Amino acid sequence: MSRRDDRRKDSRRHRKGGADVCMDPEAIASHEKHRARELRSTSWWRKKTAAGICHYCGASVPPSELTMDHLIPISRGGTSERYNIVAACKDCNNRKKNLLPAEWDEYLKSIKIRTS
Figure 1 (cartoon, helix red, strand yellow):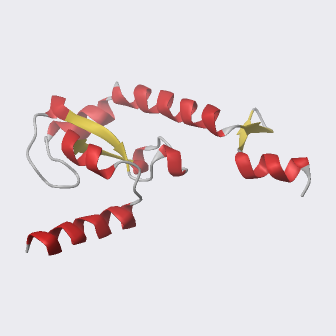
Figure 2 (tube, helix red, strand yellow):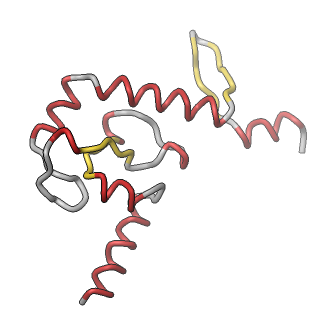
C-alpha cells in the first residue's frame, strides 16, 4: 500500500474552491463542531427546540435545556447538517454517546426487555 492510500484511509476529501482538499480527521471534527455552533444561533434551531420535546424519549423539557445531538455522530462520519441534527434532552444525549441510530434502537430495546 502506498503512502497516498494510507492518507486516504485516514482522511476525507472535501471540495474547496473547485479543488479537492484532503483533511485529517481532527480538522474535520473541528470544522463540524464549528458548523454546529453556528447552527445553534439560527432561527431553525430555535424553532426546533421551541416545542421542548426530546427527539429520543419524547419528554417535555424546557427549550433551554435541550441539547443538539448528531444522529450520526461526528466521530463516526456524521456532519453538522440539518438532516443529521435533532434536539435531545441531556440525559438521552449523554446515554446515546457515539452510537449510530440502529445501535441506539438496539440499546433502547435491550433496556425495555430488562425492565419488563
